[in-house]
Length: 351
Image 1 (cartoon, rainbow, N blue to C red):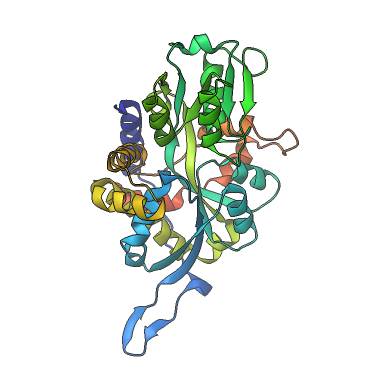
Image 2 (image 1 turned 180 degrees about the vertical axis):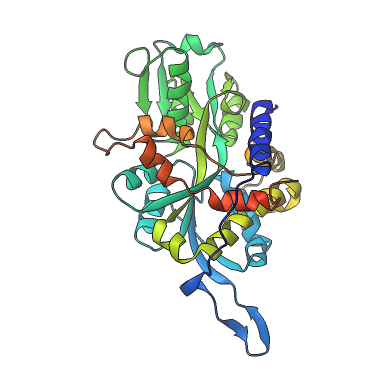
């Protein structure tokens, strides 16, 4: 399996940032977040504590655990505490100040909170493609054959649903008119999609690599579309912080962004550590499965995690109808690429 589309796009974006003549303002001191000296005989300050949340069921963020387990955050003077939370709980924790930053796979919750007045900033996206694979029975050999069929998705705002709807829209099909969208239940996540495919209650569904491989291995199903090999782009794994926190602790935020650059680099070059993290934190045991997950994530992770407002088009189109409108200007104000640009200018994405 190749990811030529993803790789070429990454190179273009990284090259554009590296060539930029952007003049960055000097970083401010981190103010109240500055940590005290670790001891009277040492001039080195103790790491600054940061709290974050992580989805404990999705190995797509294994690179985050790899960074923590191997001391990458500490190298940047940070002590990151990771707490297992699902998307809604994590978003609530960020809004309430119980965590300091998030890396959110599906940014719909971020956009909804921002549209409703929560002061947030997105600093970049660790991926800009859907990490999803559309699986269908072997008898369905083209996307066009999904017309009139039932398509499964965890929830209306889940990445698997958005990916499928975008792909079908690109083929001239709309939910409720040309096919039936079936919600399989967000509490069961992708397991619900797989179960309904097996019981023939739905005809296709988008799944992450792990679920897709297991389903195909059982026989009777195949990969219809790998979204990583399409031109369907989306902001994924967005780095999100509260605006007041950024204003008060710009030095700390820059160190966080620098550490994420290093996390992607380290993950891609340390397969053994990545597999160990999957085994420890996600309780995976199949060596071949873990190596394949590592390979795919290595291809999808951005060297330079920049993001553009156009990458949010799919998510915005599916926000609840009562969500306040997000104009282009308001969406542009949500993005703060200064930290990613600074890191790229210093060559952190060049490897």
